[in-house]
Image (cartoon, rainbow, N blue to C red):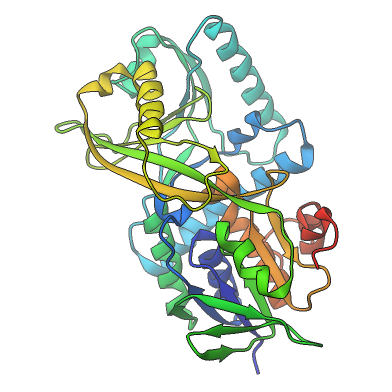
Amino acid sequence: MAKQVLVIGGGVAGSSAAYRLARDGVGVTLVDAEHEGQATAAGAGIISAGRVLHASEDDEWRRFFQDATTYHRQLVLDLASLCGSEIGYRVVGELLVTPGEGGEARLADLASRLEMLNATWRDPQIGTVRLLSPAEARKLFPPLDPALGAVHMSGVARLDGRLFRHALQSAVAQLGGRRVSGEAIIRGRAGGPPVVELEGETLEADAVIVAAGAWTKRLLAPLGARIPIEPQRGQIIHLALPGTATASFPVVSGYGSNYMVTFPPDRVVVGATRETGSGFDCRATAGGVQELLTRALGVAPGLSCASLTEIRVGFRPVSADERPILGAVPGFEGLFLATGFGPSGLTLAPYSAALVAAAAGGTESPGPREVDDILEPFSPGRFGPAA
């Protein structure tokens, strides 16, 4: 009989784990509580290994980002072949802008560092790096401030979280996996993996993967497991530029933690606030919207005539050290985690979840090294005993 794995969480992490298990012939049931504020449903992804320029000087962390973006590209091709549906993925490039005094020097430094990554990394997917004049930058992103130059990376892609999740779950179904809706409750069991209760039904499996994002801590409470992860609210606004075809506009970032990502036919997504300590407060706030609009219009005043069409709110799962929590939970047989991705979930979660799926299902590593070696720096055990 094939091994059976339960995956709890229907966002990009859980859906990616379920896809990998189903693809590798492991029996899988995906349990989705469909929480309001799920990060995947709110997010617009930027798929770029260049994100690590904003991280600490940590070779292991940079290598993980690199491998995650490499895996992403192959996953997109696999899903397109299997499902044939739109997933909101397109290589559009990225403009890094640095408004304020000393901006030109900062751009030159960024370009130099990116060129170094291109020269030293295996397949970094940054693409061609160019310093652009203000006129050249505006040609690619017309609403941009006429005074702003930029660094352009040609290989960066953008992704629609909702469409991507739908494609993953469709693939799971095609490959024989099962998806059920409802709020799961995890119960401990002596001498074996946990059991999961779902609306009166008991679900048993050889392993359980909790990929429930910001709700992970709540799910693990009945087991007495302590995992340091909290929700961080992110507010994202959607604008429309009627009569402007935005599908090929590049991503714009570099001004703090904010960014702009465009989608067809005329949508501009402006994100995102990072509100630590928010709890599960799903409200869009005046202050959050003001922050996003002020920063976006400061970089791209041409958006001032855009229509405000939607505000989305999502809760990022943020760990105590702001890095993913991946792998087996010490002291709990058959219990695995794939969570803690913070603001990089749509980039990191597919690869991370595939690694955890391989560990839980006993299948082949999706990465260039053994699964245990890749997961070790991100183990839940790094925070001390979970029980």
